[in-house]
Image (tube, rainbow, N blue to C red; front, top):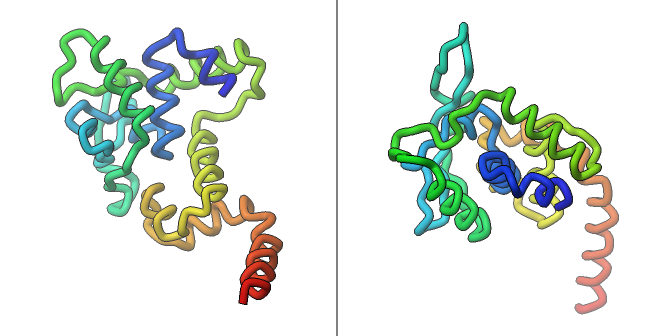
Length: 183
């Protein structure tokens, strides 16, 4: 929250990092987003491409895997954030890149936001892990978790984020005890 507060005065960075956190998308997926991918009325973002900079040229390609093509439901706070950001973008067309930047922009803004907020610096990709940790904390089912992150196999999701379940066994025991005492 301190980081987000620190970057609020930079609309593009604020909207980008809010989108990364609330969707769990990859950096390249974020940088390829267009207004046509965002459905504010239904609160969804369609992820169907990825951006990279190759040989000084912008390249938009299909995402990492076929399962990476997905629609992610977003909270109303992110809808509001994106609506306000898009309203500030001069002559934004439906097929324009919403964030017409490179990954270096994200890295610089991350560093500036961390310095300003006093938050420990993390990699931009680590925001995806923060999203995953939030899903685990909310007890989101692993299959939904996998679909939201766009992993091809659920095993990838479990192998990558399994360490974020440190108290899972204790919680299962507590719930079993509660269940048995109610019976």
